[in-house]
Amino acid sequence: MADDTRLKSSFELAMERLRQKDADAGVVQRSLTEADKAAIAEIRNFYEAKLAEHQVLHQSRQAQTSDPASRDALDAEWRSDRERLTTERDRKIEKVRSGQQ
Image (cartoon, rainbow, N blue to C red):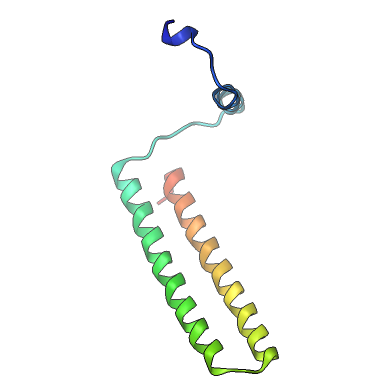
């Protein structure tokens, strides 16, 4: 069988439909350059380090307190910090991907 006539998986068919839908909507597919890939890797590394730093600080503070209310407050603060850092990371990566550096 030629490559064009081979059977396609449902995943491949779905991806073709999505590409066609994007093309119909005017969405332009832009491939990443090596500089874009390097910038994304740098962003991910930076935020991975920040998250690790915040996690270590969170665990240290948790070890110093035995009050359940304080622990809950520390957990809420950690979740908030993690969400904020993750959102910042994703926003910066999206800027690189869209070419808005």
